[in-house]
Length: 242
Image (cartoon, rainbow, N blue to C red; front, side, top):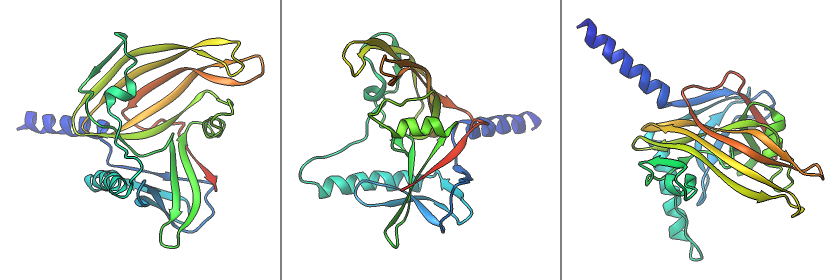
């Protein structure tokens, strides 16, 4: 009996580490009334909430998964010009070489953010407040948001990925890339340390090395993609007003 209880607790602990049930925290720079954390392509869907003190929560459950999938179906039904679909693990992480090993890669990726950003709005009054990111520094977040300006910094952001079954991506992929001046070249590398479990997974996108050209523009030279068992201790929730 004692052995069975210990086995159950071990299974429960392992499940807790790998399959998250909620994200919660406090956004210190929030100075607005309570609002919704939203996502969606066809129409805004509520994925969480934030109160007037900046405390937020996103419940990670099956209802959230179905809402995201239904929103994609609704978009495709209402769009005559083009259709959309979820990217698969194979397509997102393969670099067409033997240096990356993928298991169970046909599964679609259901993620919560757009390049690490969560949108905040009041759906009822149709008001957008801005967005927030789960990052280690505000400087890094500002570099990500300055897309195309080549002001990248070292650091990380977090996203949440959902899968029905376990999967993994291991290895690294490199590609020669030119700076925007078309004179300097560097090797851009992605390192994959991803062990996906059924349910919601914490995924860390971390820039560990930059390339700087002669004009002072910075580029992501080495990026590590990693699944985490728990939220990092230095995690910040950084808000960007609209």
